[in-house]
Image (cartoon, rainbow, N blue to C red; front, side, top):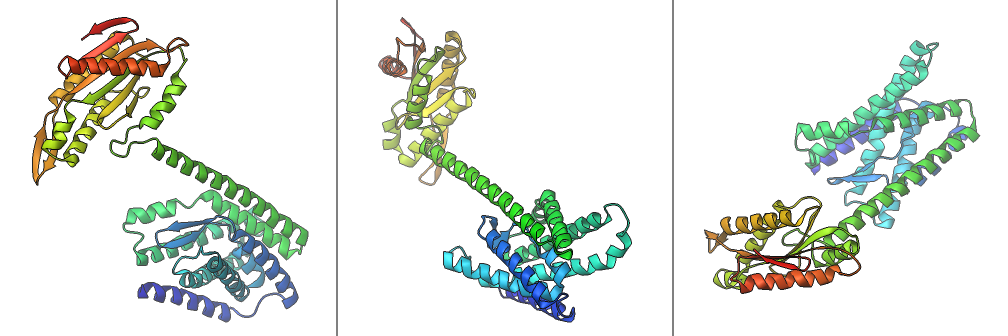
Length: 413
């Protein structure tokens, strides 16, 4: 942590020294004050948008930076003074709203020194190279984009050095991926925005300056709202998935089964409804323990799932009971699949740890299948009752059995 503090303070002090050595502010105080207030207004508005992404222990701000156009008009010292005011406003705002990270004060010095130093480099590059592109079609924009891309690359390198010191970048590939993750479209957007601002400010077109700021703010706010909506949807989907997922087997639970059954009702399609459970499961728990019993349930669920298609459904409908819905198959295909599953369960034991030793546990399962067509006459929950009765018939026949029914015809397999 001391190395990180030293590194950030060094960057800050170098930036301060370069700003002072670069001389006084390039424009008169009255004009500087106007530019300062306009930029401060819109940059503080941007600070309220959700543009900050947490990477490890560091908050990285991905909003548009207008510092390059500012430094080209006012000079390095003018930019440094602006960054101090802007960044400390953000610091106090985050402290007041409880959104600051624990090292926000230290990061504030980096957010002042880093951008000020990098844009000062861009400032000298621009005024040294601009005479060579005068008269070349789009030479100004080519130079502008190249300098913004270069300073953005340097910014990535500075951030990588911070991540290295905080332990957030462990490998070279992670560093490469971070640099590649910087969007070229964001770079172009930043270059065009700063280029237009520089032109408007140089010619003192204040209405155009304000209009450009407002336009960028509205576009950014719209994008932030859209991203927030997407994030909320992702969170809702995740919570819904959690609500419909069995924690032990990662299969669907009974709540989701009820939902799917309601959706499949009256769809006029042929489906096979299968109810199954592990035979004499209580003996497994009593002989070993519940942890071993859980391993058996997980093994059974995995065996069932491995034999199903994407269109099929698997639910954990009870403790050791599972319900399967097969779709897009005829009756003989469903019977053949069920026999195959029954054989796999019987011949593939569970390997679990019991009292510090590896234990092999053989088990069997029983199945009841009702094959029918969903329609107004037969509710799918009634079909579930038929399948459950067929499961009981398999138990009565001695367990490790498959008992099936197609509509009204009973066929014991």
